[in-house]
Amino acid sequence: MKRLISLTLVLLISITLFAGCGSKEETPTVATPDDTALVDTSNIGTVDNPVKVTYLCKDVVPTEENVQKLVEEIEAGMAAEGNYIKLEILEAPAGKYADVVPIAFRTGQVSPDIIYFQGGDLPIAQEGMLEDLTPYINNSTNVKAIMQSHNRESIKNYPYLLWLAPARVQIPVMRSDWFNSLESKELLVNPTPDNYYAMFKEMKDKGLSEYPITTDGTIAKLDSVFNHAFGVTSTIMKVDGKYVYSKATEFEKNKLEYYARLYKEGLLDKEYITKQWDTMEQAFYEGKSGFVSGTAGDVVNVYNNKMIQTNGQTAELIVLPPAKGLSQAYQSIDVTKESRGFAINADSKVKEAAWAVLEYMAGEEGRRLDKLGLKDIHYTEIDGKITLTERFPEWWARFWPTLVGLDISNITGEILTDPAVASLDNAAKYYYSDVNVVLPNELLPLKDAMDKLYIEYSTDIIRGTRSIDSFDEFVAKWNAAGGDEISTYLAEVLK
Image (cartoon, rainbow, N blue to C red):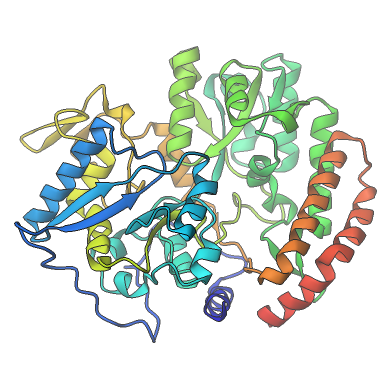
């Protein structure tokens, strides 16, 4: 626990509170004074005695033909570099992956060398069950080369989970044919909340959609568009000399008042609170709603392809900017730790071999295999020119879902559609680091109770069953439920 808290302190000291980061970066380094031990990942195993490495990841099934061929390609590629491994894909326990895998790992039901977590890893790391990846990264070539700003910040503060992927930013999109039919085009150059409101209102008034905005049960996707404009720039903010959660600030109150206006005027889906991701997407494709937010890159790519498939090429999506006001950015990215990613089992007997697999998949050959798929199935190659096949869309990366490190200059076909690429560009342009703190276990029940209060009051305010004036009552209850006590802790950590 002391190790984790110290790592959190490093984060909070190193974060620039109110500055965005671009996508073009210096050569990344991840170094700490006491983590300089050399890790040798060369000459692993032999032809006759390869090192067995086990791997567990969500939706990666050992019986799937593509996965079996992927394993063969990895083994052959690593052997060509002098590392001989036998990669075994494990079957995940039945149930929701994020819930069952941490339990199965802790109890020993599964004990892979490489394990993907999608939550539930923090207490496991605190118990010393996950390997500190810092020395491996320090001595890496490929992994370091494709790390981005948020990866470097996260690994400094929580060195047990690595996820080489674009930051998970929710990007707003809508049909370009609908946008082009509107008069509210000032939004692109001056995306104030008022101009967003004008666009939503025009969409509804012209009958383009039943409700311009929908989401999947929470306001998180809306927050990615509007948080910064209203001054909600991070999870924890310093207001009047006191460290507080932004959910209990005047900035949040003003944002909720804006959402309540959208809801009252029928611009926000009246049933948003009961929508799931699939019904949200269905409403978007069918034209009931005209505006959603999706994760930059792959998810926006899926949205674009399905929208065109449903409504024709003119319905290609357009990527919209974050609202502009007191600040301008999409959702702030929490770099206290990765929310998902690969870990190495601290009890593994083959840690160097496990890391060598992750390192290989971050290299030139691994990047091509991971992102393009299997040669002559998902792409063909003639005289160095790569052409993606009709089966390429069925492929997805089983290790590092990033385009960094992949040469796409000689590829014919779309790895990502133009809107998906634009979403990644915007995510980098409007990137903003969050400020957060990992709370000790004794404060977690207080925070859970506070979050439930927030959901109750924010939902009621938006839907009009409570007036915006009730926000002050919420803040009083929030502070009594633990806000004051946690603020005292934050002051100690952030001093």
